[in-house]
Image (cartoon, rainbow, N blue to C red):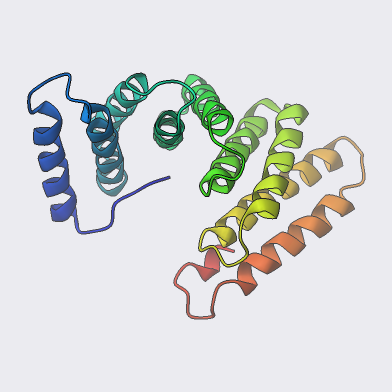
Length: 220
């Protein structure tokens, strides 16, 4: 997901500024959709920082509004859908509403479909979609979701550049999906060893790509 760096005060200032820009006349300004999309990102970042559910709902409303202003199938539409998905995921994490999870999956499916296969953001979108499918499988035990998640992660990792800073996160998501599928296989009496071996390989690479002093190395 796209987020903004800075202190809480910086975020508040960014949100206030973007509110003013979005509300500035004329209402039909050609940049209004892009400004609303930026506001959604700022609000989402602020909501994550503060834990305020009202700010998260406002971020979701802005993200949905931004999607409606972009023509379907365009890069702008794909970008705004890829921002909408993580906001829905955040609300699902907060309240556990399966509808939010389903809507997040639908948004990221559309984002993936709308983007060119070689778009530089495509590996991240594939990885995010795969992780959402893994989460849904954990609740619904739908093996098809997990198989699709592994396929998406495989594609994300194989098409992403090895030196890209997001690669460790993509490998971590891949490893999690493989671990979940191995666990599901074990529950049904199947051999999980192949998926476990691939999970260990993915997670080992994620660790290797992070220097020993990286603050988030422990996550892998």
